[in-house]
Length: 61
Image 1 (cartoon, one colour):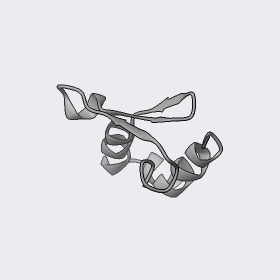
Image 2 (cartoon, helix red, strand yellow):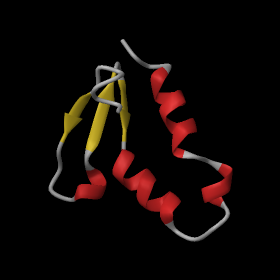
Image 3 (cartoon, rainbow, N blue to C red):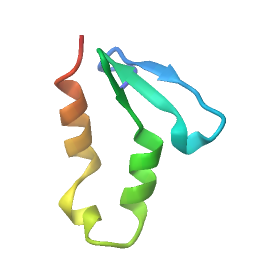
Image 4 (cartoon, rainbow, N blue to C red):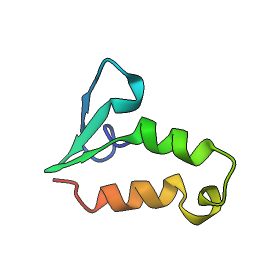
């Protein structure tokens, strides 16, 4: 969604967790963030991927 809807650029890396998406002048690490949030802990409730998308949307060119 960061690439299609926000006009981001996918930057692949050797490790999937380090793959980046560039939206405007900001770099995001969606794979690493998703992996963190899938771990069974309170952060799953505290920060959703929807909030992550909305934050990234602010940097859309």
